[in-house]
Length: 111
Length: 113
Image (tube, rainbow over all chains, first blue to last red; front, side):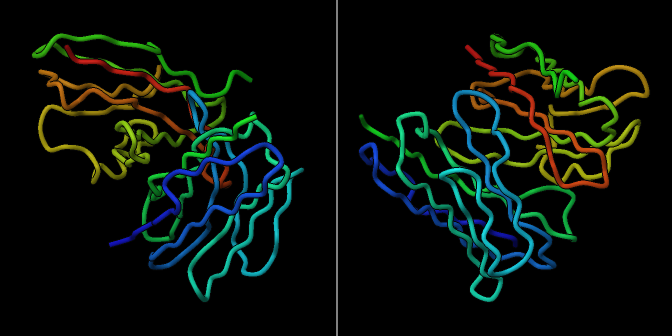
């Protein structure tokens, strides 16, 4: 059965710290891995990764995929209180009609 | 472009009542997905629909839950005879079929009292 595991489940840091969130997966016929940020309401799309080793970057956020070791990381540098959210990792495969989500990492950034 | 619209945002039902959750996908999107999020858990797939068709309902509980996406109007997720365990946030997502950019609605938070 397809599986997506995120770690840590929760993380508390101070403003300015750098954090790394992990997502490992087991899925057949992998198509893409997606990262979402969920604050109070709907998840918002951050990145979609399909190829190994190519870093995607958006401001202080970056992400990379390792298809050999079956994991992805999401980095946030110089964290701000507005980065506090649940970060969800999801995997899309050619087999399924949906994305499989991990349980999320709850990030709290303290001033 | 209004994005994915879900309503109501909050719904309170007594045990045994019916809950109807609505989702209007983004303009031009014909693929709709429903997810359920229990407290402290990730999103769990429920059902995937295209217009007038249920493509995959492997995540739907076998009883009391049904979904439709009619030719006209929003997609509806219907929960009959609700129980306390149905309390959750229900999210709808849509995409246009050729891209992977799922867009989520703001969700409906169902509370069963």
